Length: 433
Ligand SMILES: *Cc1c(COP(=O)(O)O)cnc(C)c1O
Image 1: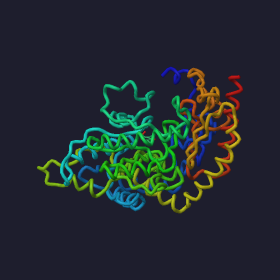
Image 2: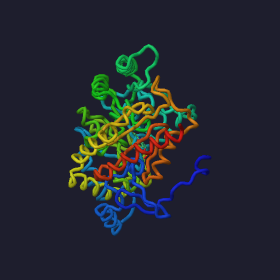
Image 3: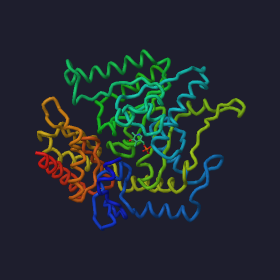
Image 4: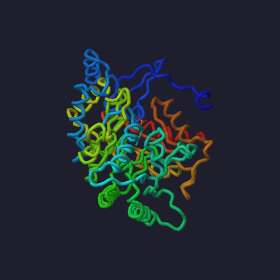
């Protein structure tokens, strides 16, 4: 925690549009959509109004035994939007809980399924995955920096190697290593399906791993095999959902319908904590029965389905349609690629990874062998300090510079985000030289 004591952290007092304003009046462009969740900017009239209107009715009661109109309307809107077959919605309040809920549902489902109960006690998940910070979601995660110390607290999983290849193990070509990863995924499913309660994956892009992008067709292959071996597919779209990869949900790009869809971050326009876990009639039906049969899913967070958050989410979905944001995201995607292209040849840029408006620029000490900078150089952090001086807030993942603009950000402002990022990378590297 020492770094937090040693550094002057801006204290943000206001937000206007896509800018953050600190208590000293400094303005910064919000280049990471306030940690990947803001959708349309700050103080957005339509979202503010929807929350105020709901505030005039009730701020919160409970969804344990009751419901509320915004929660019901939002459930319907999410089901209408989601891949086919996802007809049931379970609310919670963060990405971690959305995943936690899916894991527990999948685990319980196999013990209660009408086709005959099975004891399936482990999960397949991706190496370097991030699904949240609660103990269950950490168990299906694989980022050693965040997760390593909790080893003894976690349940057992089977890790599938992430199919990415900036650095390949000895003896592999890039293509060869990617093929190896796909073959391993296939082998692990075939060997372990009888003990696996679910396959957990961030579709297309592993965000916290450093915006790591899976090869085209990977998700589809996972779906084919999990379907063949009757393994529920748990798609964690907490980061990739709501347009960020260029389709409304990332699963759509490979025409995949998962058995669970976990949503949070962008769901409420980045205004209030809200999450949803969607699932199928098939899974839901395993939880039906008389109370004494004990099929109930005993899980519910106090602020689950909060009406203010649901009202914000409904307003956000409406704005998304009205402003035709998917088309705008297409333009944002092209602009980012064009603006960052000159960096590709930079001797300290190992790789620029982009899927839609999710971007990771990986800095390296040397492109020869893709050697990292020494950790204590904190290169990623240095770049964000340079960016801050130039009026841009970004946050790195190690030495990966992340850009995650809001889907509603206008193109001229997004161009500025890219320009400042390029300048800041150059400035930080010059300081080091
Ligand atoms: C951020 C994130 C989470 C965790 O969400 P919280 O709301 O921070 O608990 C889970 N999965 C993915 C893919 C994420 O990016």
